[in-house]
Length: 407
Image (cartoon, rainbow, N blue to C red; front, side, top):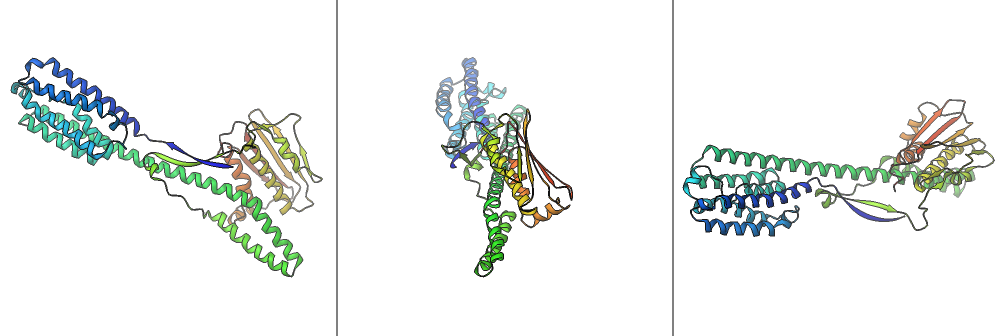
């Protein structure tokens, strides 16, 4: 299968930037409106007009800057805060002293909070505390004395900006944790898939070489011994999960995660396939195959994985029961799922044997059967009674959302 990489954006921070963009525009018009309604009360209105002209151009020109963390750089934040602080200090020059002493708004009014919030979203609560402290100092200088309204507004901006900065830091930490968890899950799934393929192919061949070499003797026996050593080493590697985790990319810290997505080759069926056609080759003199009279459609990936799980179950029958063992495959097409049962006439599996085999690195049932069905969103139930054979029931939903079905 061919592979490509796709970047999946998972940022919960981006809506805050969009909200900040709208806030800056709305509060800019609000500040201009406040000035327009009190134009006649200003001592030097031309100072206010000049400032609002600069504020209008600056707000609209810098909208792309507050569209995301990448464009909102430290120099921009410094200039943006300077515009706000300048407006606060120019209020005493432009406005009448009586209006200032009476608690009149500063020139930028609540637009100033947007500059502080930009610090909070970009750098967290520490940056927010720094910016809000400068705004508080400018307000106290503009008022000349710490009045009740001034202190109230200063504390409100200070607490709100720090709280938002803290929330942003928590959100970023959560995104990094989620990205790491998704990467670990993806690597684990891939490791299990590779382990199944290794078990179904390489380990079976090595085990066969070991048995045949021991039977033939001579140089073949030495080859068989080496094959046995490699089988043990490979089983240890597979069961131990020694697959290195790739480092989470820098994009993941910004709310992005790069994951490999498999795309089917040109000859891969794009529509449902008949499960019966994949299971029919397993039928033989000692394997009875019972199927419905109508096609059993499944997604191509799900059908292949289910057929491979059936093959793994039959391999276990031949390996542990013997070449003369009889087996039966029964396919049932239910309304919402497909059930395949594999039954043999062997002596059954002793209690605790499966857990022991898994501990020894023999993962035929754990990975080749149960692992495949879990990835398909299905189940694999194994029932074994000593002296009465073993029955493996595999169930797959027709609309599967599992890992393997979407690969």
